[in-house]
Image (cartoon, rainbow, N blue to C red; front, side, top):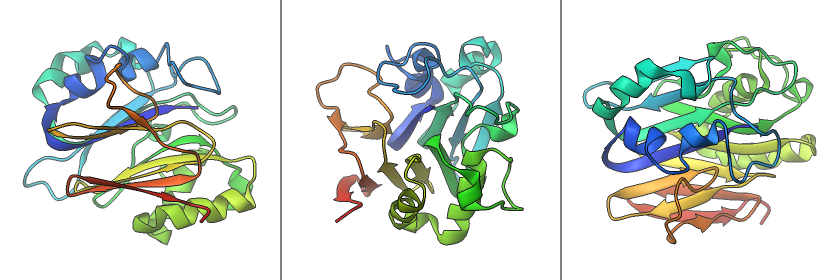
Length: 230
């Protein structure tokens, strides 16, 4: 299992979003509060972010635990973005541990993180996947299917693979899409923007938990939550 987070709003530094919160992704890499599968997320991490004038997002990924990344910690306070997607990884048994297996995965302007597990035999191999791991294979298939149709994709895949856990998080720099499918997700709306995360990174009472089997759609400062099984 993994933990992930997306931000859309006024520019914030990667340090503010990932490292500084009392229960942010840095802490979640070794002491998550709501993780139901696995105890740590020490098998890598990644951050994708959008910069003005750049047509596609930049990514920084590693196979190392986030708490060991002194170089990232030194530059994170000076990298800011209005849209960020980041994750810490707990590798599925048998999956590779190199950085190509760490989210976020990318195609064009879209970034994707998968918090969960899926049977690769149901997906089928995809030649354009960044890794042979289940999450990368899932990402490649969804990029083909259409990121905007993530809810439809998850609802169908969940029926074909009843044991799958399919919490997805996607962004194209202007929109966040997220699904809940057998794992936790929360949303925080502030004056400056919106956070969607596997679990709250602090104890702000404005955090709202998303019911299971739902789709979250964030755009233009508004949050829409719909039932994937309706």
